[in-house]
Amino acid sequence: MLLVALSGEPTCPEVLVPVCQALAAGRPLDAAELAEPIARDAFAAPQDRRAATAIAVGAWIDEGSPAARCKAKALLTDYFAAPGLPRTPALERRRTELALDDCESQLAPNATSASPPPQPAIGVATTPEGPKSAAAEGGPPPPPPVTRTTPVPRRAKISDSGHLALGGTLVGLGVGFGAVTIGALAVLGHEMGVGRDLVARVREDGDRKWTDAEAQRFDEAVARAQQARWLALGVGLAGAATLGVGIPLVVSARRALRLQPYMRGGAAGVIFSGAF
Image 1 (cartoon, one colour):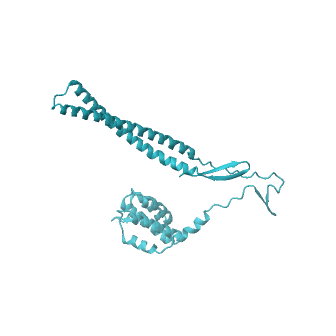
Image 2: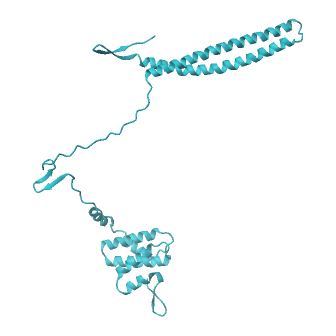
Image 3: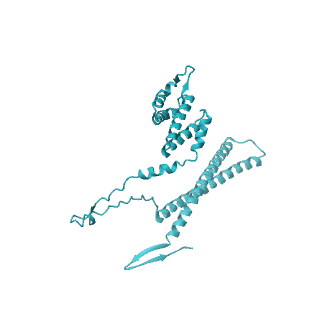
């Protein structure tokens, strides 16, 4: 730990000068306390950390108390856990020597004594005869504790009658879409018939040329037929989707309304109704 030059004068690294002075003054425990921060300093040179660790661990082991040995064990554990620090046989021997020390049991009494003392109960007076409440001393009784219940928000719920009304509306729209689809299909069939009649008339006359009136009417029939086809397709799909949603709503609402509570005079009961 203390380096001796060829001249015989003791030398010490600059960072360890206070530690060396404490050792020279015969105060090894003070030297250990000064060396511990240097041994744990991650920015210190590895050789300086090794020397500081050796000084602190040696002083604490020589002191001999369980607490000092546990401090030495903790310092050696942190030293060997740090990468890049030199491992010497002397430090290895110290580590082996302290391996069997039970330091956890040394910390248990400290943890027990650190628990806060129990606080006296509020509103109760302690006397030699025993605890007395505020009501026994003639004072007004304490007010009962107020318990506040957090209101639970209710989810929006549609009644069975609302389901029935909504389903009936959707079914009505679906029926209306179906009627429009049937009308569009009728227009499609009529215009296709007009076009076929025009073509047949021209072929009967020996494949003559179309007149301007016939060509204009045929074009109108084709255009109206295409419009009716797309209208029937779009409205038919909308009606099918509307009926697919509305019919289940009506059926489920009617099933729920089969069980109806009623009050008649002073009697109460349940009406079961159904439809087939």
